[in-house]
Length: 236
Ligand SMILES: Cc1cc2nc3c(=O)[nH]c(=O)nc-3n(C[C@H](O)[C@H](O)[C@H](O)COP(=O)(O)OP(=O)(O)OC[C@H]3O[C@@H](n4cnc5c(N)ncnc54)[C@H](O)[C@@H]3O)c2cc1C
Image 1 (tube, protein in one colour):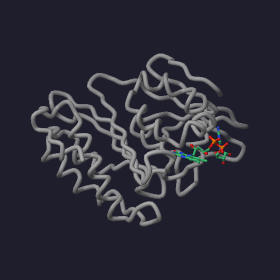
Image 2 (tube, rainbow, N blue to C red):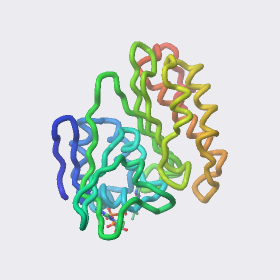
Image 3 (cartoon, protein in one colour):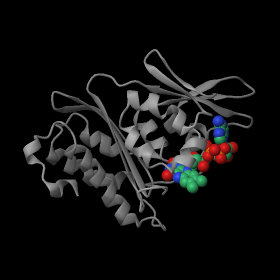
Image 4 (cartoon, protein in one colour):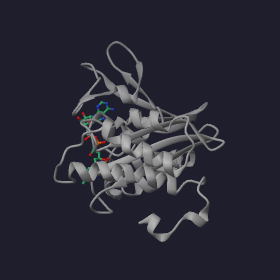
């Protein structure tokens, strides 16, 4: 359960592998993880914390589940009745509640490699840059073919009792041109997907606003946008 290796078009990471041990291999496949992992806990936490612990912990604000949901990652569970697999989004049943049966454990994680025209964006929002749990984390896997969003998976942490996809917002984007107006229209749908809580990290209204801003950030940082349209304010 320790180690990671490419198997065909999947990266398989053992559940007991530390962040630091899988970081390089994962980032070769999906470079967007690098900046996020740099802000996951601290070097000490990244040297000790494991992928399996971050997922099985089932925190709504763990940093690994949203991007893994966006990538349609498969979890391999093991236990008295043998192995079974499930998409990671089906693993989270409720607040800190998982699909693990009695005696079962998370064995490994199978992450698909990028396909043609697929990109991944991961943005973490927390009060401090270092060693701080996310208020909101947005992870977006976009497939853009000839300027059209042919497929997308948008996943968030901090917006619900579990890490979760924004299914209605995804539907608002699919088949549309990847442009500012359509991104703005999709952002307006986010309120139908989520009713976030207010807590010590952020208010509900802040969470909803920042979640939309993260989607806009993905648009602003994407190659589809002519560079001359970017201003310093756009990046703020
Ligand atoms: C100071 C600090 C800062 C942190 N900052 C962040 C952060 O910024 N972002 C973030 O995402 N996380 C953060 N964390 C959480 C951290 O990354 C780990 O996810 C967490 O501490 C769990 O550690 P662990 O992997 O050793 O799992 P453990 O503590 O060993 O386990 C956690 C839970 O998962 C269960 N479990 C572990 N492995 C498995 C498995 N293979 N199968 C079934 N169940 C299993 C255990 O039984 C336990 O219930 C932080 C933690 C600390 C202490």
